[in-house]
Length: 189
Ligand SMILES: CC(C)(COP(=O)(O)OP(=O)(O)OC[C@H]1O[C@@H](n2cnc3c(N)ncnc32)[C@H](O)[C@@H]1OP(=O)(O)O)[C@@H](O)C(=O)NCCC(=O)NCCS
Image (tube, rainbow, N blue to C red; front, side):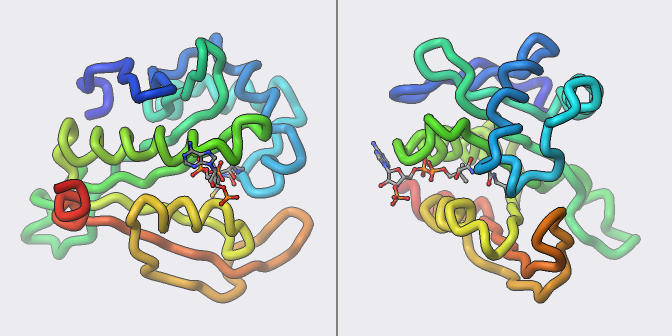
C-alpha cells in the first residue's frame, strides 16, 4: 500500500511527498489554468467543490505533490487496482497494478520535471510497492501527456475511437499505455 512507502523521496531537482489538505489551494491554482484544465477531469473553477474532492481521504491517500525549491509545482495520482483475473486466481491479481495520473503547473512544464518525477514514481511502483504493471491514459489530442508516457518507456496498448467525452470538444479518441515490471527492469539495467 502507498501508505507504507517511505516518503518524501528526492530526485536531482525535486521532492515528492504525500499531499495534505493544506495543498488544496496551491494545486487548484494551477489546475484551473486553461492549459491544464483542458485535459483533466475537473476544471477547479468551484473552490468548494475542488477542495471537497481533493480532501477526500481515499483520493488524498493516492496523491503525491511534486515540489521544486519547496514550491508545489505538480501532483501525481497513484491508484492501486486489481489486475484482471479469472475468479479462481483473482486473489493473485489483487492490488498488483497502478493507474498513474500527472499534472504540472504551466510554468513548470518544458523543463523535464514530469519525466524526472515520474521516473521516481515508476521506481516506487516497481521496487517499493512490488507492482507488476502500471498504466496511464489520456485523450489522444493530449500529445504532451502521451509523449511523456513514451519518454518513460511505456508501451501504447490502445487507441480508442471517440469513446471519451470532453467538456468542450465532444467525443474524442483516447490513448492507453502500460509498462510491466520486467520491461522497466530491462530499461533500468
Ligand atoms: C503532461 C505534462 C505533465 C507533460 O509535461 P512536460 O513538461 O511536457 O514533460 P517533461 O517533464 O517530460 O518535459 C519534457 C520537455 O522538457 C524539455 N526539457 C527542458 N529541460 C529538460 C531537462 N533538463 N530534462 C529533460 N527535458 C527537458 C524537453 O525537451 C521537453 O520539451 P519538448 O516537449 O518541447 O520536447 C504537462 O503537459 C501537463 O501537466 N499537462 C497538463 C495536465 C495534463 O494534461 N495531465 C495529464 C492528463 S492525462
